[in-house]
Image (spheres, rainbow, N blue to C red):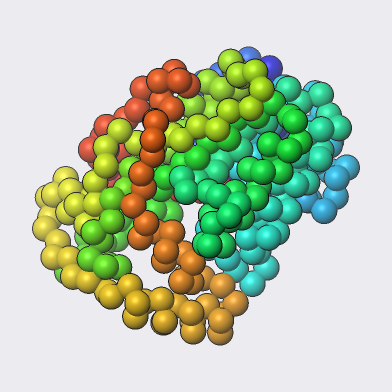
Length: 297
Ligand SMILES: NC(=O)c1ccc[n+]([C@@H]2O[C@H](COP(=O)([O-])OP(=O)(O)OC[C@H]3O[C@@H](n4cnc5c(N)ncnc54)[C@H](OP(=O)(O)O)[C@@H]3O)[C@@H](O)[C@H]2O)c1
């Protein structure tokens, strides 16, 4: 079997490539945008690194040649001067869909987010919803995985929690009273590999979240406790944070914005968790937290 991965240097991509080392019969085409990312990819007999450009259809078609499954990981939450939701989340997906339609690809896996909707008033959720819509309209057989915050070594969310848990005294948005369903990044990679091996017919949209719901505040406290520390958590009023981020992001051309604040402070709620449908066993949250503590991020 051959899998083509976009955004192979992302935290999910790196984790997926690591897990795929245990699957020597699976060949991987790892697509990245830069020489720097190219040279950082793991060296392995089964990994074939490719530089791809989303405005160069030939580069995508070459990377997808003979692939059974495409795993589209490229995408962002935090916009930067050179990357916004329109380019990273929507245009990149449109380009991947076009290339997949011209290739022999049998299944497309797209990592979306819990709350994605093309009609959302939030620009991030709207961009992921628009990307989902492009996939649905393509007629390709596809699995859309709507995920919550991902935790594991290397994930941005994990570094933030470790930093806050180690701080002794800290302040978080709204006191961290919003509920999260963090998903272990290893479980996401396992789910992706499982779907590649047994792709469903047609198109499926799954919500795949972690096994427990906990407030952000309690996740930080639990992490501190597992580290043998205590942490006092105060509150940054969300309204103030939004005003500050609106000014700073306008000056910087990206970074934390009111849109991002709305995303990270929204309760992560799902109707049906897809773990059983996909056939994976979820890692208990405490084990995930221990993993990130033991690896230092
Ligand atoms: N991390 C989470 O908690 C979380 C939660 C829900 C959904 N997701 C989704 O899961 C996927 C992987 O997330 P991640 O956290 O592993 O990502 P990440 O580490 O932040 O990496 C982002 C990836 O997107 C690529 N990218 C950035 N701007 C781009 C653009 N304009 N066009 C094409 N590619 C672009 C980056 O390539 P360069 O290095 O070349 O910039 C990189 O490969 C993303 O689609 C993300 O939206 C993540």
